[in-house]
Length: 473
Image 1 (tube, helix red, strand yellow):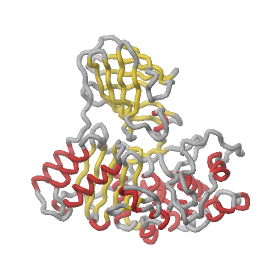
Image 2 (tube, one colour):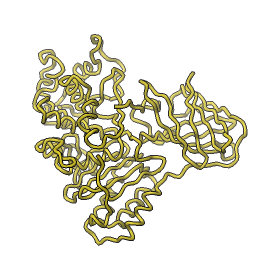
Image 3 (cartoon, rainbow, N blue to C red):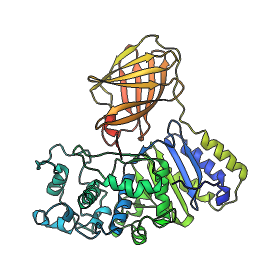
Image 4 (cartoon, one colour):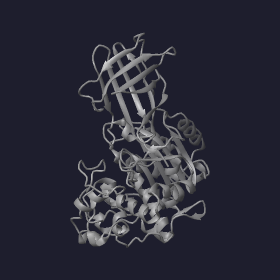
């Protein structure tokens, strides 16, 4: 289902403030990919910076937690899972675990008050995992054995992937289906029905805390649902009592040593904020809820300083609400939003033959990406092949335009690429944007030297780009 469309003026928003917001989001350091703003339930601004697009999914990283929490709330309302049951009661015999685990409830996990005082598990996985029976989860076994809470559940808070992972596994155990099955059935399909992708552990378990790839309209629909107290398009999707409780920061989280808009505490997989509350994910993925203004915002991006994006919203969006409006500015805003782009790279005339360049040892991509071949095309563009051992990742690179490609990835998934670049003398430079993620590979090759294969911002999944892919859900 789609949200209705309106204009800023019709919803008492000054479009001049939104134009100033776009200016701020296009300053250096703001690699914004998409922006959607709704007021009074209607979309008043929406835009995608090409090559990002409305129908592309986008890796949300920890914004995934807010989808997990939404799914959990629905299942709680259906009586399938109990917030105050020990989380491990759904997974193991409680008599076999450390006593403190018996006091860790589902509620503690979804609020990250499980008793850990620091991050308890690097989500890329441990180098050594315990031996488990066939079909069992070695990651779960490692958590139970070696990530025992070091504080009292409910009394301490730490941002911690283990807690949400346990919720995901409890949901799978009690329902007999992976978390992502319920995310699709209970949340994604009712909201937009848009495509979605997800990531799992090497052992086939849903993460819960990261890895969900969704469209920007889906992110906005999630924010709007929470803005409306769990209701979507007139239907109570999330139980009203859960929807009222989940955004409230826990006392333990308010004692945490956080900075900026992260200092306002943490609820059930939603952050408090200086204005409203939000779900967010690494490198600038946001579902922002502003109840006092009846506003919902969705943002995807590739940024290191996430506070700067929030500051831009507080500085430019908030003063525009209930301000004098300007219909001419509405028109200018619509034109500007339609023309958003990340300028493609281009070059001058380059070699007329294929050039193969070995990897520079200082490159951030793994060593098995050992070289690239740059081949000119009849249209003035290029085909760049990344050689990864015996594999060849073929990429269309536009000279002055973005061209799309897809790389095969593990588990029958794929990685979507939009690329541009060209030769400047003996130097070939290209940007390979992983357009379903917040990440970009920067290629700089010397015709008679080596090629640097680096990340603008390295994925949390590690330096191999293929690990950032997800599977369809």
